[in-house]
Length: 529
Ligand code: HEM
Image (cartoon, rainbow, N blue to C red):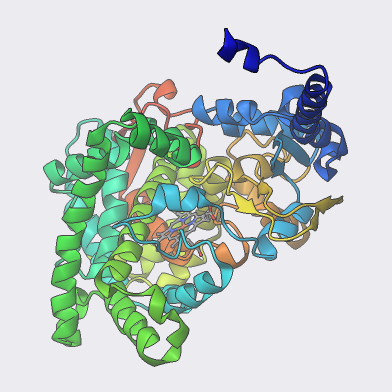
């Protein structure tokens, strides 16, 4: 009793406690409801839902349910170019917004590290700090420049071999072909031949077992990881640490490691070739790996001494970029090619026009290895082929989802002043490419829209965002475009295609940051001409 009575409140202390409690409640109300909903500079921005002003649940929900691109696009159609998705998150869909965020090079968020870090080491894609990123990217920029790519005889010869010796025999089988996994295989084979040389490059077109294993380890974990490990990683990690509850199954980590190990073995072999300096190897020279080795090592030694502490482990530093660029090449180009084949197969008139255009190349050379003897610059400048690639990238952007950045200081975004630092801001190609004022009938695949007056072209190009923009623009875009054009030109010169699958297997495109055909299958009948 004595103990209990000592806890009873004295008449003096109870009003004080009440006052303290009221202050706490009011502060919480102010901090979490009043300020974000009505007083913050973000309060002027239309909110996706009434509760999005005070809670991130809506934003989490659309990411978790994998409906973000479509939902955000609907919101922009309804509320205009800037929408608030959460108390601290904005989506923009206008050129002013792109300029404010991407041309100004706002830093990336943890999102990239959470999703694309390999070998536990950050790479060009995941580096947050703008200065460090710029220094690192510059080391490889020349190797990927358009002039380097268009003048590389190694790219032409290795890619020709891949197409003619590995892909064509499969297409000649006479049976319907699911071209989708083959597009992934072609993309990785052609890219790694450039990166690591023809001998060390993958041969996933012919080696179906290695292909399936890689694609399984690459895609199977995704439904478990993209939300829990990327969007709410701290929460997921805390649960595991304190309560030993795994939201992401262990096999997902093992899958990532299996693919990393598969490629690390190749990188170690490439390192030997580079160490022996046998550049006379021609097609076997690991062009990108060698550039990275020399530039990163030189960067350490002299040119960029301030990078010293960033590169404690050169092997992993090179590997993380090589692996990141490989996975960047596989999924993006693979998905574009699948949608492109699908559209050409169901638009026979455009397929015929393309074939007529491609005759220009065949007349240059009619031998079996015609692809090797064509002029790659002529191939690159064919107007309809270019329009077909652009239009597929527009309607089915492989990186369709939002590209998050963080406001570094108080700033103005698309007419909204005083946006504080630390706000997640982003745009998506999915929405930008569906602006009906710029792209008439945006849901329709119309390559001819790109063959138009210069004025229209300039406007469309401003909104074309398949490769992003600003300092973080895609590093591999020149390689990607040329490698896609080569295979499309080769296939449609030699084959006619017909779609024999189920449309629902292909469209609508999967939602998410990157998205391929809905059912992961694009069934075509190839008829040799
Ligand atoms: C059709 C093919 C491709 C498309 C549509 C594409 C698209 C993109 C986009 C939109 C970004 C910016 C993403 C963001 O900031 O969230 C990006 C970045 C990047 N891409 Fe690609 N990509 C393609 C192929 C490739 C290839 C073949 C490589 C191989 C080198 C590559 C390497 C990279 C790298 C390293 C970055 C990061 C650049 C940086 O942060 O500075 N991509 N890509």
